[in-house]
Image (tube, rainbow, N blue to C red; front, side, top):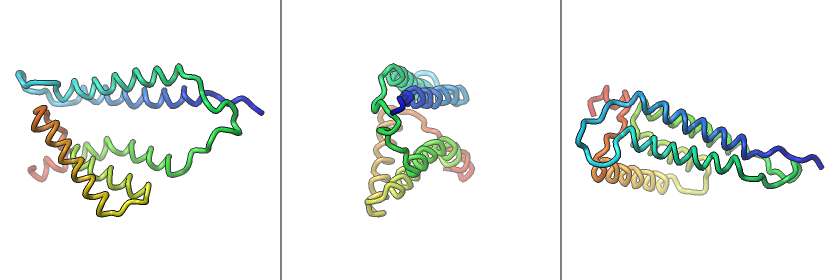
Length: 155
């Protein structure tokens, strides 16, 4: 029985890379007018990314389980597809905006996982999009990214 490498290091490095990329992306955000209450469009993603970096560090310091390569489960192709979908979220958000990107992501991920009716997926994605819009736009008064396509269409 061969001893397996600790996959937590690779996973933690991947999470840290995504968090650092998100932090780097905040430097391209439009400035928020002064005097708005709460966290701005720059501070909130940086806060979430800092939390992800901390969690990645904790994961990287955690011992792996299972301890042998034979015991380790294989990563399914569906898991890789979901990961690719996650990577595609940011470019999609840049094109269509945050709320439409969330709706598309939730529906496509739900269809990939299967087991849920399309109508249920659409309704739950719509509910999530409305809830995010209410909380962040109406309550926290944040400006969510609109995307170049939505801006071009005049919304």
